[in-house]
Length: 366
Image 1 (tube, one colour):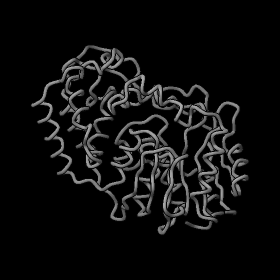
Image 2: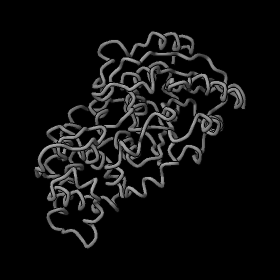
Image 3: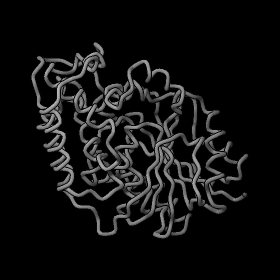
Image 4: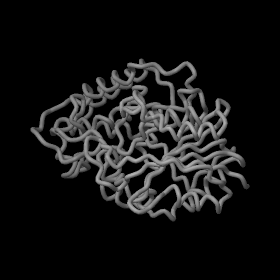
């Protein structure tokens, strides 16, 4: 990292708004491994990595999402530890933070294909698909998906890449998606006829696309954990925390990922029971616990860089800055970007978040 003041000055220029970084599609192919609402733009992750990370750092991303920040760090040869509370994020981040062998992945596709061909649904398995799920799939496609759920149930993390690709194609309006016409990020009510689309064909096409671009020679594999930040521990202190936590009261994670959580074995009732565990369900006060945990995990003199938002009448950066003072942090700067006119995922932002911001803090006390 350059001098921290130089890094902050450069970030104030919002370099990720320049072409080509401004495009949601900029960057490595693996940034699109699995679609995800509120995914950080890869260009932002790139500049956070470029400006604030050193080669010798161990950097923690406690809200990894689908691994956008840790993947950019890994591409620059920097060690990372990633954490997220939901299995979709865990699977996708793990898939991106490990070097993948193309021939092994295609052997896994053959294994899945043979499993689907040689097995039939057991009693009660078809009932796992409720009426909401059944709206999306031709009955024969649905049978293949249900068999795939059984296939992945006892598989190890070695199958994370294949599973992430499958999670991506579960809904959407692109040729390789399985569902009737919907949306590849949010499963809006599907339209059109029930047309049989073979799972293996769509999955194979998706995997092929993900191997179009090699990793950098410097790529550094990272550690990935599934869990809640408030219960997380690690044997050594981190040099930096670089993260983009959920914005307060702004993202309906369960609604947007209902089908993918269902594939991971969580019925709708089970999803609702878990909803209180997600950070976005809570107000800003939950960050008292989060920032306290950050202070415990971070080295003294270490930095915390957070991508946040002004949500309705709440300036998250200012609020968390004040919380940080309680736990030994000094705020170095808060940088704002007006996003009130931005479009997200093809629909107009309804105004919940009208400014994004970067909060840069340093831990100055133990």
